Length: 138
Image (cartoon, rainbow, N blue to C red; front, side):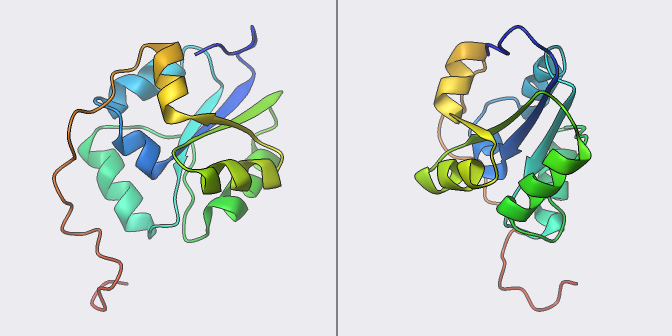
C-alpha cells in the first residue's frame, strides 16, 4: 500500500475487512513496516474482536472497545497524532464513517491490491462467540 512516502500514519481496519484477508497476522506485520500504529475497530463487542485477533495472532496498537466505529476512530485519531489516519473498510457505510471523522478511507480490495495482501478464499468458519444476541455474556 502506498503510504504517500511517510510512515507517520495510523491505520485502522474494520473487523470485516481484516476477516476478508487470508493472513491477518502477516497483514499487520507488513503494515508495521510503513505505519506507526495499526489496529481494529468494530461495532461488535470487545470480546469478538479480541477472540479474532488472538486466534490470528494479531498484535494491535488499539481497538475499539465497547464503542462504535465512528467514536473509536475519533478517539484513536486524538490519541495517535500522526500525519495520516487511514481506515480500511468494506462498505459505503465504512467510507461515510471515515469521512465523518476526517479519516482517509481505503476499500480493503484496493488496499490488498496495493500492498500485495492475499484475500481470503471463501468464508471463514463461523465463530460461536460472535453471536450478539447472547444474554449470558458480560
